[in-house]
Amino acid sequence: MAERSGAELVEAVAAALQSRLADLTGALRDRLATRIEELHGDAVIIDLLYASIEGNIENILNALRHDIALDKIEPPSAAYEYARRLAQRGVAVSALVRAYRLGQQNLLELVFAECERMDVAPADRAAAYEKVVEVTFDYIDWISQRVITVYEDERERWLAERNSARSGRVDELIAGTVTDVDAAEKVLGYRLRVTHLGAVLWVHETGAQQDQLTRFTSAAAAIAEVLGARGTPLLVPHDRATAWAWFAVPEDSADAVPDLGALAARLTQAGEPPVPRLALGRPTSGVDGFRRTHLEALQAQQVATVGDDPRRSVTSFDEPGLKVASLLTHDLDTTRAWVHETLGDLARDDEQHERLRHTLLLFFQNDSSYTATAEAMLMHKNSVKYRIASAAKALGRPIGSDRQAIELALTACHWLGRAVLVEAG
Image (cartoon, rainbow, N blue to C red):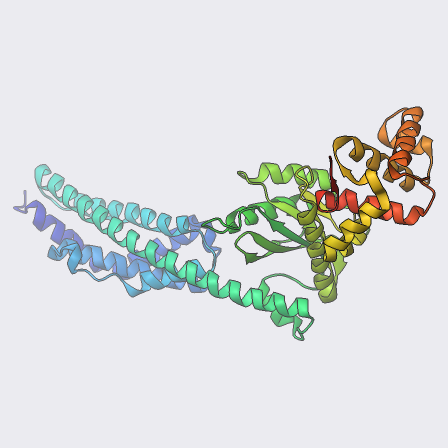
């Protein structure tokens, strides 16, 4: 049996594998490209993967062959660039780490197979195995920490630049100054020649230390599912507690009203509290539609914010009365005084007068039909009559006098709530 120590065996194995470096690298690249689905056959990424594998294998084999300590090794520049490219393409960091784990597994298999071909004592082979495992594990742990740091730094930088570019393009679209639609689509990663539904998502956490982007991203995915939206929604952070979103919805959505109850329920399921509130515009098409549906969503958000009704987590611009209510938010002091003047005691902020206002508003919306109102409220017709009479008493005059003003004031109360009501006393 050959007189070869464990250290000499390690050196011999490393030298033998170095002589086949190009073949080993190519085989491992092909294996990883197949096993890691996130690479999707991207030729540029796979070329960088080859260079990264080659550099890392060469480092490990040199460390084994020449007993080089980790602090004397330089990380391959290709490994850093590979990490940066994955970050720029939005590939999860798990794919980066997995490549190193699979690479380590493959290299150990090659080393052990090479050891088996050499005629040495079992004790020396065991010592060689121990050395190889120690060096490869230490190296993979060492290089993994470095490429993860490079990945995270690049991902943060790239997202900041991308978000800045996307935000700038969105601002131009809203201002109506975009002339090159194709270029805008490329920057946004979102098609503009489709039917859009604009949305605003927000939480009551303006003073939070961290932004809510992860929460909004999950919420947007849930909303897209309910809407049957096509592709990934466009989500742009507006501030720490607010995001703007656009969904590419089916063309026939233009005449359909979103199921607000289903949206509210899905948002509740989408993540941990606080559940984002949601304001929607109306589905509209093309570049101009992109702008219009967004502005409508902003108006719906304004009404929802002023009204601040915890029972209403989703608000749509298309809901009855909201368009008028949005106009009344611009001067709340004047609106409040006018509502009190128009409704008198019916504008009091308590449960009794809220029931009377709700009944009277539905009565007007149902063409002053007691029967239709009773059916809408699932009440007896006589109960509706009693409430209408009580509402007239609180008004201090017949409900038919200046009906339009009364209905408008009731609409303001419905949407704006305590912001325009009179404190009960």
